Image 1 (spheres, rainbow, N blue to C red):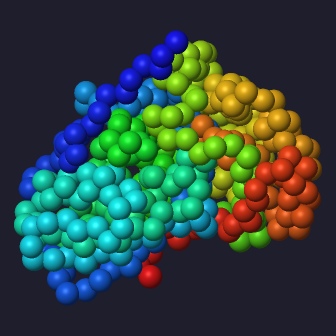
Image 2 (tube, one colour; image 1 turned 45 degrees about the vertical axis):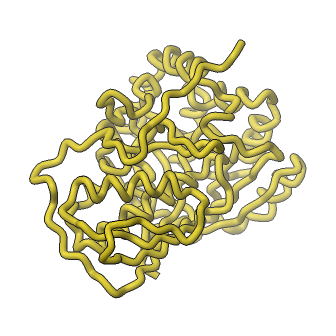
Length: 353
């Protein structure tokens, strides 16, 4: 059966602009080149997959999410120019970034242009937030360069509600966002978001933990080429109506108190229960046609990793664990022939560098 075709998104089209006092007044800083980096995010759980949908027809980001920042960065160099044009130093992701640059011009009084050089994180379409961290880096630094016309909540909503993906064909397609990447790009740390991309909780991850990523030997596929098709996502969404209330209850009544107490061992136990009970967990892992990722996660958990999960819709696997277990976790990934990244958790968020 032929895959259903995704609708195209017109470059710079506003999927959402429910903001007051538009266009916002700006105080642009000319003559300075800004260098900015944004951490990537990993996502362990969606609170309500029945609300996970693309940003079309005024639909918002109502699914909620749990995740944290990692020391894998997307970088932007930005310079404001007097001419009303947008210039890219490299073509990679230029359609995606041009989309957001045009949107910022539409909702502000800024009449000048931008010179943009982008460096995304090196692991696209692996569940590590490469696209989102890059767009967030751009929007964040443009906001800074224009004198901060938008506050943090507004910036996250602009990024999340207008989120798109760039296909290998160069076209833009509707994206799905929870606001997680936006908040992590600003604040870092362990983040829980709820409907409308609102921030519920942010806690720092203790510095004695490492984030160890295992990347299966699979071809990176974008939104158009992905094997996880829209009907599969819709099926997960339908089944998750049974689980969403339970997961929201666990988040509010158990996970948040554990995070406040810095009890990451208990957070990890609860995260594992969510992986088993929540539709984004086991069915998403098995969608890659093998039980090996699930077997690997089970071994990671049995070896003592506080958290073990597949990030977003994968295929990258994540272990958050104390530093003294790093070699044990690496040995498990090596057994499955996974590429390994040993990273720090990011508690700082986006930074001018």
